[in-house]
Length: 480
Ligand SMILES: Cc1cc2nc3c(=O)[nH]c(=O)nc-3n(C[C@H](O)[C@H](O)[C@H](O)COP(=O)(O)OP(=O)(O)OC[C@H]3O[C@@H](n4cnc5c(N)ncnc54)[C@H](O)[C@@H]3O)c2cc1C
Figure 1 (cartoon, rainbow, N blue to C red):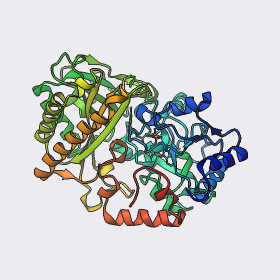
Figure 2 (figure 1 turned 60 degrees about the vertical axis):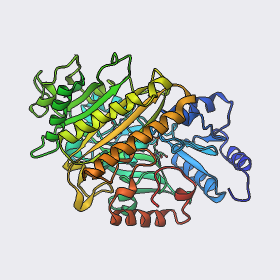
Figure 3 (figure 1 turned 90 degrees about the horizontal axis):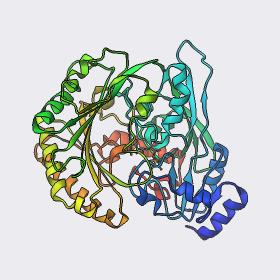
Figure 4 (figure 1 turned 45 degrees about the horizontal axis):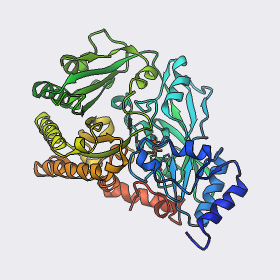
């Protein structure tokens, strides 16, 4: 903060934009401050929440915050669990009122573009597209925000054919620290356009996204739940690894989720939730590309011919604002045996860790995202360059209820993540890059990218934010 106090800054903003500034105690402040997937973030309680109604207003607010050197955070859907990366004790810019969704008139035989405000979650966008038989590569849960998801890459049900979801963005509307609002697309501010496709909250506040849609009336998918015994785990991991090697069917999608809670799992093995999808209609037995997962004995099978909109509504367990949560993540190459070892060790460590003594309702999960050729390579920020071979991205997710155990559970998760990373490093299969949307603060997001990419990102940040407002005053994964 410069010579002017935070109270004065909020008074200045309140006078200029009376309808946008929310102060603690008001019902609208409490409602806005409740919109965090990790309730620990809601406990930060900013001195003021600013909720602009337009891109121009966002720019004008940014100018005040920049000029007064005020610290502020930006929030779209609030689904990033990292403590304080999407909130601040000073000012929170909530984008929730930037919620327009517009299907643009087609200008070519291609499917129309969709333009939406940065305060949306994916569900309302699917509600608009689905009646037209259209899809976009968006979040696999309705409730995930568009902002964080797209600016850090985004993994959709169509990752194997379309790559990172941000690759389907054709234009960003961006409010800069100077207060200007600019468009970034392939011909206008093309360097910023490139950087925003993976570079996150380092350049400006994106107020709207315009994306390509695709025609897909019906698809296939759902979750199969299986008990994660050693034999089932071996079959699941063999199928998972097969799916990123050789001739991959680009219509197929898989995410392997495992989770454990002593009561839900009756003290036995973890449960697998196999999230499967296929961009086309297929027979009841499922697509050939996902046969390995369909052959696993399931205690529940929700796969069916469906739509993107219905599929994204399947996740009712992991969504909502009522719990605490954390992510840690790491990447590696290696075969099915490495994955089986990681799985076995993770649950042995979790069960011995005291997590469930601290909070019996806690749920510990380990998820695998297969980063095949389309995600690992390409021309965007997230490509690993010469090192662009498929790899597995693995996410530790723990959820719990009581704030009194948050610190302890973070320490436990950090210990487990360190142990597993060391094991992978010792085996020579560790990949330094971590996908930021599933990462914790200590994980290697930008630090794991090739130096040429990092240098280019810093150059673009310097051009559009010469005072370094987004490096110094805004939390998040930074470029330095
Ligand atoms: C239940 C659940 C399901 C998930 N499913 C998926 C999935 O299917 N695929 C996937 O890839 N990931 C998934 N994720 C991870 C998700 O992509 C990230 O948590 C992502 O950051 C969420 O975006 P958000 O807008 O809700 O986040 P926020 O917490 O609002 O923002 C995340 C970060 O982005 C910045 N930011 C947000 N909007 C803007 C903006 N407009 N301009 C500048 N900076 C901005 C914020 O400052 C913050 O640093 C899931 C997470 C959860 C908890």
